[in-house]
Length: 65
Image 1: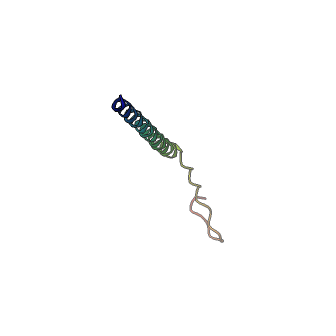
Image 2: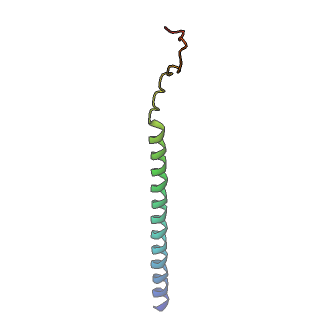
Image 3: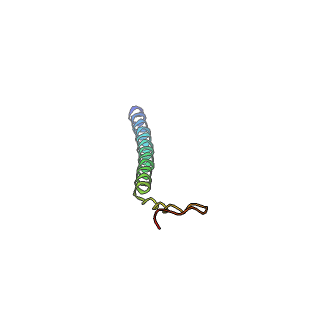
């Protein structure tokens, strides 16, 4: 009878260890997915349009005019 109780206690302990391991993996996977979604969001942002070139300072005449 004692042997059965020892085996049962060992199985319960093993189950608790497995549950803890699965929870750790789930948390790690959630963090990885969050990182992936953040990277996708960063890549999907449109870059700002560059400003048109400014007129040069001075008395010279631009060729465009």
